[in-house]
Length: 198
Image (cartoon, rainbow, N blue to C red; front, side, top):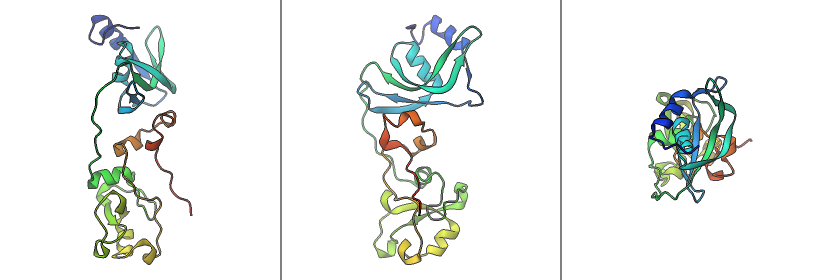
């Protein structure tokens, strides 16, 4: 269907359909440029609007999730691709306390426990006293207990082990929280990194 996104016909379609997701009320959709590069992650409502208006095509469906009306249903998109190239500058993810917590999924990188952000701290893997920098590759999320135990030492000196090596996020860390399995073949670099098993 190619009804324009602002046309009365499309608005009727938009009002007609409601999400039926078998308990899943929020579905995020990966948006790719015409070149298959990642553009962003958007809500399902906007993704459906882009597809219905003819501005994008659906590449992947979201499992068994359907968008239903009283008379019909359509697949819920999981990945869509724009039908025209969108010029967008490549943005760096800013280094910040909240973004480190997002990258690490609020998980202590030493004991693996998940905490509220108010109960977490930032730890310099190589201590600042030893020349460690405040940057993505040297700062991790740590609970207060582990940060205290580690103190002003390296993990090796403290007899502790990082669950994963800290790295610079290629995309906004919040993508980790909405990442779907069918996205991996399009943005494999954005897949959440599994924890190392000792």
